Each structure stands twice: as C-alpha cells, then as structure tokens.
Length: 170
Length: 170
Image (cartoon, rainbow over all chains, first blue to last red; front, top):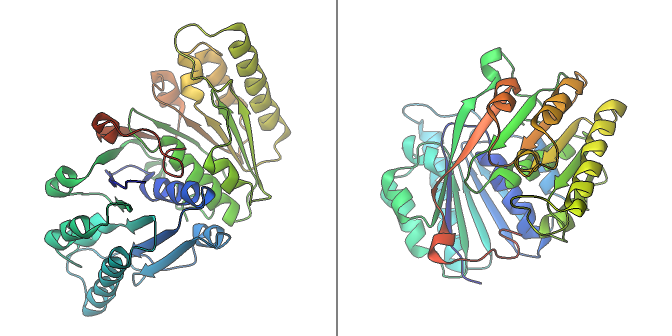
C-alpha cells in the first residue's frame, strides 16, 4: 500500500485525538504503528488504552512540562533523541504508520529545525504513512504534505474554566 | 465529573477519527463509552479495534450506503432507531461518554430534525459527555455546544485520486 503524509494542525481540540484514532484503526487492520510523542510525558489514559495493542508502540520524548520559548538543554536532548528515533523508524521501514505527535510544535520550540522535519518527509519510504500533528505547521510542511486538516477552534470550554479531565483530555 | 457537549464538524479528515480517539482515551480511564453510528454499516478496521475494549460499545444504524438527498423509508427507519437509542442511553445514564457519530449529517439528511438533535443536548444528564460529529453542524447546535472544532480541509489526497484505504480511512 502506498503511504502518504498527513498533517493535523490548528488551535482546536482534536489533533492528538485524531492521531490516536488513526493508530487504532490501523492496528485494527493489522498494520504496525509507532507513535513518537514530543514534549509530553506521563501515563495518560490513552497510553493505557494503547497498551492493549501489540502492534502499537508509543514512546515519549518529552520532559512533561510543555516547552515554551527557549528549551532547556534537557528538552533539547530529549527532542534530539525523538528525532533520531523517527529517522531510524523511517530508515528501518518496519512500521506502516509512523506518527510524529506534536512534531510541528517541536519545530516551533526549536527542538529541531523545520528543515529536519522536512527531511523526515523526504526519507519516508513509499509504503509508510507519516502523520505529523501539532499546532503551527509551517507553510513548507503544509506544501510538502499530501493531506492537511486544520482543527479550528470555534469554541472551547476551557474558556468556561473547564480544566483537562482524566479520560476526556488526558 | 461534569460532562459537556463536544461537536466536531467541517469538511476535513479527522472527525470520526477524533471521536475514536476520544472513545479509547475514555476507555483507558475506565469510563463507559457508547458509540451510535448513523449512516454507516460495515466491519471497519476501527470496529475490530474497539472490540478489544469491554467498556466500549459501538452500534451502527446505517444501511451502508451514504445517504444523500431524500432518505428511503429504510434509511429513515434505521435513523429513527438510532435516535431512540441515543434517547435511551441518555435517559438510562449508564455511560460516561456517548458519541453520536455523523449526528450532524443525520440532520442534513432528514433522518431526524435539528430540534430532535437539540433535544438530545437538553436531555443529557449532567455527568455525561456527549460528542456529536459530522460535517454541516447547524448554527443552533454550535450555539448550544460547549466545545466546537471545525476540521477544515486545507488539502486532501483524494484530489490526487487516492481511494479510501483499509487501516487508514476504513
């Protein structure tokens, strides 16, 4: 099966959630899935749920505190490891669906460069589906992708003061 | 936990996929999930994947052919059953997350009325999270929801001639 590059960006809720959905749909069809999560760390409910699937692997390359502005040395080191992992995954070509979770934010946060993200698209084997999520996808990434959805916030309940809830947001 | 009303609409890829992601995140946290799918019928890869979770139930109320224009009597009957199921689910209050998959499209296709969809929001118990997906959410539904994301198509590979693929779209 020929694989494409999908990007989920925008400021609305649903980007990570959609990539989770993609992962389990693929797993349901017997495809092999690898999720590299940047910036995040923690035993989210979705991590527990995904552990039911032998053909889904999730690896977190974050320090648990969302990076804003200039990343620390530790943030950078974790990001570099995640980036290297993505390179290895694409090179080894043992997975059908590779998800770079918060890949766009990793670029905005200077964990790696836009060119490095574009290089992942170039090194993608023809049969691999590559999914990149995170707000702030750059124009070059959008241009190079095959499918791009902008998750646009029309209304969000955090403005009513609703905090992230276990089982719904985390 | 207080529940809210989430709507995923727009013409881009990711609405059903995001609701799948919501379902498994909730299941990972031990919440009880019920998915009512309008218009669809078939053993999609996601149905296979969701069957791994005891606390997720999926029920399809479609005839398998996507309804456009005027629904047949059979389409209407299937839609009415699905709508009744949603009423029962909300009344019985035995699930934490109830998903009305393609609920907006069901209204556009005249399976039930906008007022009936709004009535579901009114009858939602305080502790239940209700998710409504499908393109073409009406203004009244958007006004009544707590969170609305528009999945906006920026680019889609079906325009390159890519057909729905097992494990990726179905």
